[in-house]
Image 1 (cartoon, helix red, strand yellow):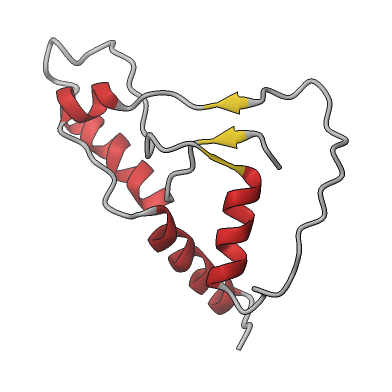
Image 2 (image 1 turned 180 degrees about the horizontal axis):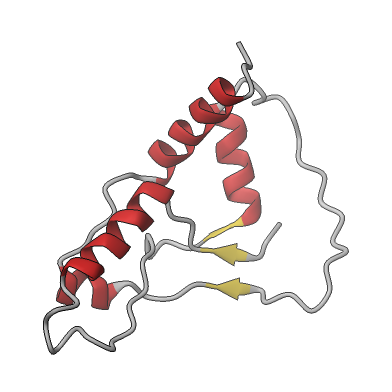
Length: 112
């Protein structure tokens, strides 16, 4: 549970790509690579615990098996270029994005 990733709410990712697409006509943007993220890498255990806190399953304990092999320990990139060149910023905090995702899954799977 100690490997870290930079999680991003899907709506923020979509807005990032749309923002990029709307600016592709600019010579200085065309052909450039951009990363979209929160610039706040957290561990898998931290995200699991946040999900548990936001749901009705706060009393559950994750079971960590430590069986993964050949996995990158820390995987994240900087979105500074997207901020400065495109003017893009995520509009959801990690907690807001997770709460919206949890609500979507409850509705989709009818977890009343």
